[in-house]
Image 1 (cartoon, rainbow, N blue to C red):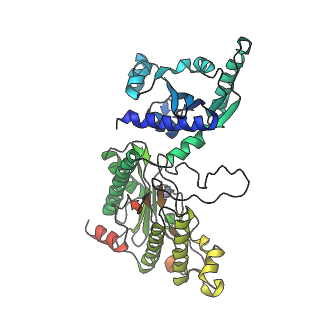
Image 2 (image 1 turned 45 degrees about the horizontal axis):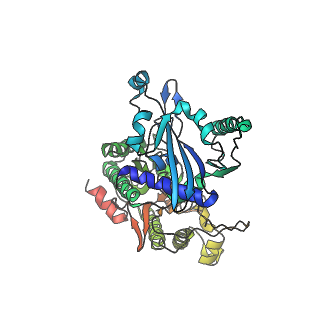
Image 3 (image 1 turned 180 degrees about the horizontal axis):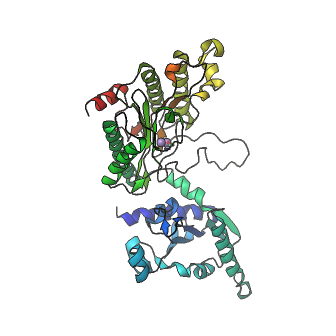
Length: 455
Ligand code: GLY
Ligand code: MN
Ligand code: MN
């Protein structure tokens, strides 16, 4: 399939939803703004995921406007792109712009104009349309622009123009589409995960006592960029020793010490898609007894969650399977006391595990590392009762990432102090269960030790 066809088919799918809901209307979706880092220097630019999903266009300063009419069997869709105009002076400084003349052909859209015409043209496009699909409460600036466009349409009232009367959330429609990955997306995600897996291997191979966390981060970045990934999907966590128990730690300057663990949670972004892998390994290449015991419990919990990651199960079932294995392991290792809790069921019911495992096991993964899509069933039922957890379906992608984090405490055997373990893989749900796309890096304790020994 031609790349442009992918985006056109997505726009048509969105148009169909707009037709079904309101008989058509206008959708307005802008990309992300550029962000200043400090004087004359910007953060590396990252497009908005929804906008990119519908256009494949990565430049800042762009807006997609879709005008939808017709009927289910005869959809009339016009896609208008507003983008930065060609500007030799700016292009010499900042880089080549596609420009509105070339955009329709290059991107496969019907119309393109300079973004300087957006305000005026939207006043025209919104005239006599009932339904407008925007991101509700995107930003104060987006609200201001919407008010401005509405004012323009209202100012034409005496010429017989009717302003729109309904505003709908376009995000909900796009996010439901993004939850299900097509073959093109899964192909990119497989490649992103393979690059990240290689980066984790590289870090394990190079790790030696005395190195600093930031040095391992540099190795991860080397592998990401050297493999063609454009960016990290999120800030890399490289956490030595006690830092492994800090969930949102960043790679810092802590020295990696013999006898301690190193937890790395790092993944690249490739062609707009995230990968998200965590491995935990001994800095000196050999797990201590207590480290290995907790590692193997975490891996057993991950395996239990993987077995529960299949079509027809709910989103919560992998988490529940992981909780059961983790809690049993904590009881076995006497980190939780059976004499106090009475039974495994009670330990789970009273969330006794939460002292050592305080996060969920999974999240959606896609263009965003914590990807979009409702975690609850999205029925039309508008009653206030809590909707059931989402049923897993083919094409969804989730992470599976149980962990155990033991901080120092008087009632805990010192041998377990500062052991923080997380094991995270990326799973594509398919008709026969799930495919782990991030297992290019070893996960079993023996395999990790063998890899580190031989490097
Ligand atoms: N790296 C972010 C997460 O695991 O959720
Ligand atoms: Mn994750
Ligand atoms: Mn992660």
